[in-house]
View (tube, rainbow, N blue to C red):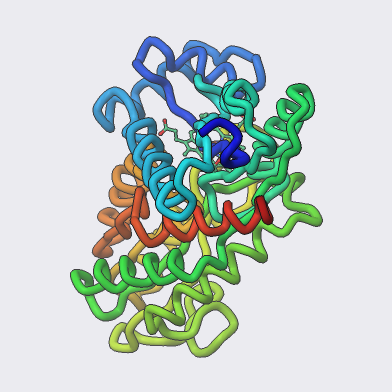
Length: 327
Ligand code: FEC
């Protein structure tokens, strides 16, 4: 059996989350590149985790995603792939995942990030760390930069938009959100272009009305009345608590503006920049954005997360195989 196949390695990368409330401080310190948070900052983050049950489901959702991608690879090429998880801010770290691949004796490593859109300040950082670890281990490395054009992912998002809209008033605005980044990072970056492209594709597939710049509705509201059905636009969420400017408008600001404008009766948030249930979705949207919508007198819903959707995970596995090239 030994030597029958050249084994390939995949490191699946995700954000990572504290395993228990005791680990929140170390996690936050890691996110802040080694600078411990102040007691106030830490208490504020702990209270957000408490509001969603103490810890985040992200670890479990990521494990399920990795298992689904591993199963799809194994179905397509039995025994060929060694799959490891590596996360950005909690163990097992990206470097641990790459080292585990090297230990398993793979010939090369592919890196896949469980975030659909590329920014050098986000996905680019994952690949830089994975590539450095692969170089150190003497492994060839190829990173998949983005997969926001995945047909199964666009279809799955559109299906979730349709399902959630069915429970909302006809005059509902759809807000496609992603994690904000500092304006400094976005200079010359393709993150915003990719988010616009995928929002447009999902909106078209879900038969939403014209988006920003595409018709009567768009930009800051437009002239359409409540009977006109949905428009859609991009909004930003979860901006960091730092003094520099972050990309906006924030989703809360957009919801307040929509409430004040009186042209819509509901908002549906589709967090297209994330793949799974976690703090930024369960707290920033389900708690915070929902409260703002209620205050603004708008009905609110959020699309279900992709999590380990089989068609999406299978497409990611297919992309991994293509990125690896012939074995
Ligand atoms: O459920 C969980 O436990 C973790 C949820 C979580 C996800 C996530 C995804 C992204 N982030 C991105 C960028 C930044 C930048 C900073 C930053 C800070 C935090 C903090 C927490 C946190 N992030 Fe995160 N992020 C998640 C959680 N993130 C907690 C620290 C407290 C706070 O600011 O809220 C600012 C860092 C700095 O201070 O320098 C920038 C991006 C994503 C989406 C792509 C990805 O998944 O990697 C971009 C999930």
